[in-house]
Structures are given as structure tokens and as C-alpha cells.
Amino acid sequence: MQTYLVGGAVRDELLGIDVKDRDWVVVGATPDEMLAKGFKQVGADFPVFLHPRTREEYALARTERKQGRGYHGFSVYSAPDVTLEEDLKRRDLTINAMARDECGELVDPFHGLEDLQARQLRHVSPAFAEDPLRILRTARFAARFRPMGFEVHPDTMTLMRQMVAEGEVDHLVPERVWQEIQRALHEQEPGTFFEVLRDCGALAVLIPELSDDDRLAEALAALRRVAQQDTSTEQRFAAVLLPLSAEQAVTRSEAMKAPNDCRDLARLTCHFKTALADLSSTEDSIASALLELLDHADLWRREARFEALAQVLDHALPDDLRTRVKALQIAARAAVGVNPRELLAQGFKGKALGEAIRAERLKRIEQALPVSNR
Ligand code: CTP
Image (cartoon, rainbow, N blue to C red):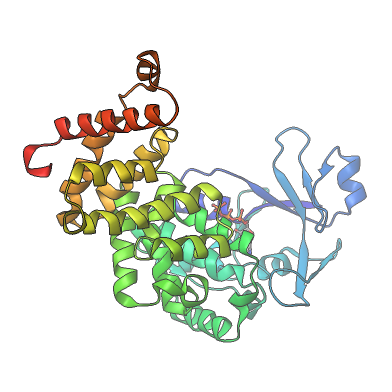
């Protein structure tokens, strides 16, 4: 049997990037032979094993055929007669379909090295179309490697457009889509992920609220600024949904099965965007409007979430709203210092206690705000 290093490890090494995971393909072996060598089987659907010492993944060479729609319904064929080339052929992009043999020689039947040097993300074969998740993977690789000059090859873009037009993206399970989005949000240029999805038509299926050019531009500008900071998935996701109303953000997050923390921060961000824009026109006293917003964000119990929200607003909102974000932050710092226990000790109870807390918070906000903001 022969063992080959494959996939991302070969690609990244050629790009001069640190290799994180190493995946291997084993040709000419049976599961029993692997078990006899001390490997542990992990894949339920595919014959994948963990090396007894390194814990790296070793997969028996396999071919895959699609049978149903969406991500399910692959029939896997694995046997000692499946060749390395057959295994590489079922893979997504040529730069991901190279292998290195035990002597360190590159095995590259689909010209991945040429594409890597020409900075092209190109599909290996028409079998790319059998797995619609690959549209998102390709967009994610574009987001990762765009700063190095990589682009989606025009033929691959054409194929992805066809796949979208045939409804392939409609059948992706939300959990898999979310997993790709979450990873994309932390790539080098997350905005490129959404641009590639727009270009192939998948964005109109996945986040139709962003199909409008102006809305997408707003989302991408917000995402760019938020992603330049050391920010969480929740914060980056909130930047993407910034052009939506709070209700739309909730509906979209739930449809995408985004985690609750992502949904909640997106909802708050959208709500605050509108509320801060309306601030001076609707309220006599800015201080009480700000206090209401702090209540809405439940600053009192969710201080860390409020800080995350303020950071997104500070970077994602247009410049003319920045002074209001600053005022909000000043108000938060002032109001959060009110200690309900002290008021309790002064004899306030029940409804009166609530009113006293509110009055004290309001007073402190008024004192803290610059005169022009009161
Ligand atoms: N692969 C594929 N189609 C998929 C998923 C994976 O063809 N839908 C292949 C690719 O050849 C890929 C390899 O399986 O290189 C390993 O997949 P994965 O670990 O997800 O990707 P990496 O290329 O290693 O990328 P990353 O650096 O993000 O881990």
C-alpha cells in the first residue's frame, strides 16, 4: 500500500503558508489492514482512520457518485483498486487536488500547480457540480486567498452559475451553509466570500435581502471595517446584516440556523442603527432616549454583549452617526455605575426601587453627556 499527503497541506506548503492539518490518502489497502496496523476507524460513511500516534486522518482512496439532491445521497466506492488519480479527481479545486508521495514527489494530474502559480481557483472536473457546498467552499477560498491574487476561474464561475440556476443551492442544509459562513467571516477578506456568492447568484438564494446592490455595498463596507478589528463571529455577522431591519435580521438568522448569540447581536445592531439615526428627531431628551436604548440592550445583565454591540456600531455605522455611538458609550459607562443595592439600603422597595434606579441612571447620564447632547 502507498500513502500520500493530499489536499490543503500540499497546497499550503506550495504557497509557503503554515500547514495546519495534514490529511493522507492510502492506496491499495483494505479497512482490515488499517485496523491491523493500529489505526482507529472514525468515518461512518467513508473509510477514514486516525493514525495511532499522530492522530492525523488517513482515508482509503475512494470515488464518490452523487445519487440524490443536496449534500446527502453520495454513494462511496472504496477498494484497493481505486487509484490515487481517481481519488484526486473527485475533489473540488485543482489546487486542492495535488498529492505528495512518500519520496516527496508531487503528484499533480489536474495541473493544480499551474493554477496555483496562475492564482486560479478552478474546478477539477464536472463532478464539482455534484456537491453544491463547493460553491461556498470556493467562495471561502477566494476570501482566504484573494490577498495573494487568487480569483475564481471563469469556467468555474460559469459552472457555479449553472448549479445555482438549477436550484442546487436551495437544497443545502442550513447547518452546512452556516458552517461555511462562519468560517468565511474569519478569512483574510470575508467580503470577497459574499461577492463571489453574489456573482454566481447564490447570495440571492442564501441572503436575498442583500441582492440589492446598495444594500450589499453597505454590508460589505461595514464588514470590512469590523473585520479589520479583532472581532467575533457574532460581530462580523451583525455587520453583514446591518442593512436589514431588526425583524428581517431575526427572520434571516433563524432561517440560516445561525446561533442565538449571532441572531441577537444582529437584531440589536439593526435596531440601534435605526434608533440612533432617529434619535434627535423623536426625543426631547437625548439622555432618556439613550437610557431606553440601554434598557433595550439589557446592559445591566449583558454588559459584555453591549460592549460587542458598541464596537460593531462604532466601526460599522456611517460617520455621521459616530458621535451618537460615542454618546451611547458615555451614557452606558455612567449608567452602569448605579448600584441597586445602595438604593435598596436607602429603603427603596418594589416599584419605587425601580423608579429610583431609573432616576439615578438618568441623572448620571445627563451629567456625563457633553452639554450639546443633553
Ligand atoms: N474536499 C472536496 N469537496 C468538499 C470537501 C473537501 O473536494 N466538499 C476535498 C478537497 O480536496 C480538500 C480536502 O477534501 O482539500 C480536505 O478538505 P478540508 O479539510 O475541508 O479542506 P482543506 O483544503 O484542507 O482546507 P482548510 O485549509 O480550510 O482546512
